Each structure stands twice: as structure tokens, then as C-alpha cells.
Length: 97
Image 1 (cartoon, rainbow, N blue to C red):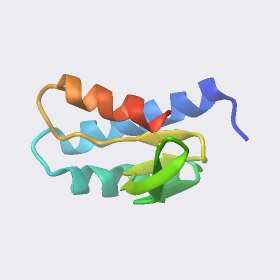
Image 2: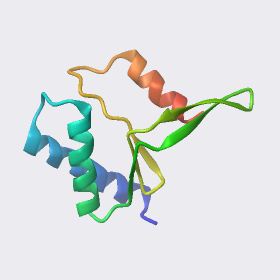
Image 3: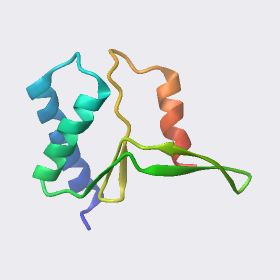
Image 4: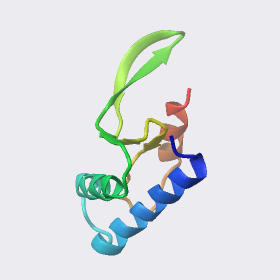
């Protein structure tokens, strides 16, 4: 298993390469497909659209579908927006609970 610093370095490099190649203006699905290719080209294990259980008082109340999970360690939530809103940050924070 990769160390966290090495893993996030590879992920960031992959993200920058996708942005360098595609730029802005596409839908999230295009970026997800391209990033999945780039991450795998860098030797990383990638899972797309995996269900993540949502808990309430120790009970599963539903499922959320993730965008990308890398090496079973890092969840990538893609946003094709010009600026992140507080709701986007809240969404990510809820994944860790």
C-alpha cells in the first residue's frame, strides 16, 4: 500500500494532467472518465460509482454513490463548477462520519 503522501502526490499529478489536457467546461462524467484513465495509467487501483452507506444513529438509512475511490484510501468527489460552495464542503465532511 502506498504511503499517504506518495498516493496524494500521484492523485494530484493525475488531476493536473487531466485539467491540462481538457481544460474547463465539460460535465463531471467526462472528467471522471479521463481521471480514471490517468490514475490507472499511473498504476493506481481505481473504483468508480461505488455505493457508500449513510448511517443515522448506527442504522443504514441509504446509500450515496461515490465518484472515484483510489487505492481504497482516498475518495474523490468531482465538481465541474467555477467555484466550490459551502454545501460541497459539507458533502465531503459527511463522508467521513
